[in-house]
Length: 236
Image 1 (cartoon, rainbow, N blue to C red):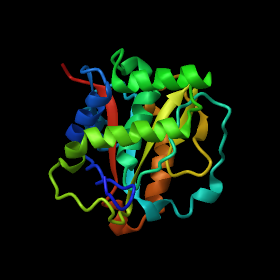
Image 2: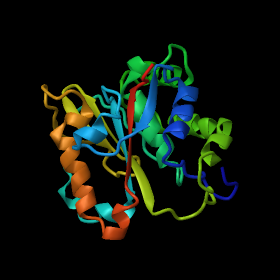
Image 3: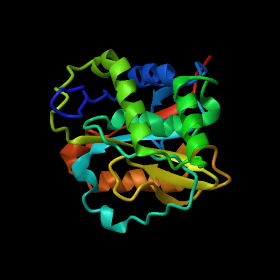
Image 4: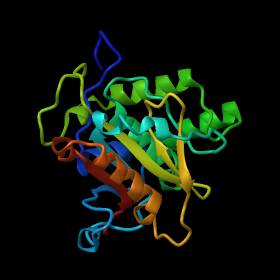
């Protein structure tokens, strides 16, 4: 964490790094993050353990410039959404969104499970949290996991660097598919009803179409910087 600014080194799009972080927060060891190489190619999907409980998309910020006007936001749901207040911490918020909306995957009495219970007990809501308490929790997570932020296979940039890449998360809650972006000024974005016949999030047409629309709005150079991770059961 920078002393001059609420900023942190961005997390590398690396399944091992995401999984290490998630396990420290309380994700059960039977679950982990895996690279998603395609949402449509059967041969590439064969490398992905199923079901996928959350999809994390990394994309260039410029790729969603033409999409914001088409967003329809609703707050009448129980999906958990965190407002991002720390610069370059979007990877951490993506993990929080993944895990908080899949509470059955958390170890009882883990840090995140206890935080979610504390917030729910104090607000009387599954999803409406006190921003001050949330900020304190996130800052403590960052402080206790400084080395995880700088781990990975590439050289980490400075915490205060302006990064053109951003993480968002897709989850399902009560029969609806949501896009969760901590930078959104309006909160969670409901993309529509989930397909009850789909195996998991990767099979959901609304997720596939949404990711495709981001890529269509990106330049040829920016498309190379897209990446996806899935929260999945381990192979063991």
